[in-house]
Length: 52
Image (cartoon, rainbow, N blue to C red; front, side, top):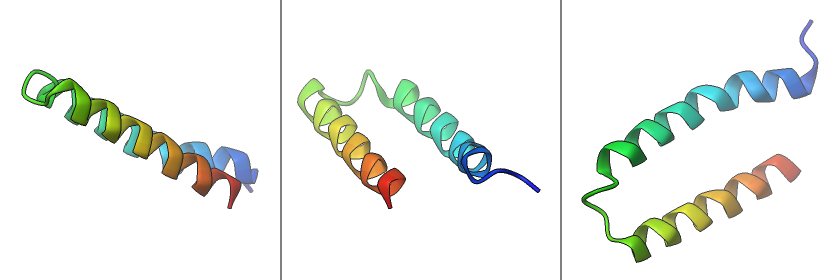
């Protein structure tokens, strides 16, 4: 059986890679303010989900 933290990593990894791929693809087209707001929002939500 997998340890819960290992399962979290395995589930999290594809989402992280997909998000990075999307952000690198659209980086030139998004303005910086939106990109920063989106990044901080994603970070905040993911931090809350890790706690819960």
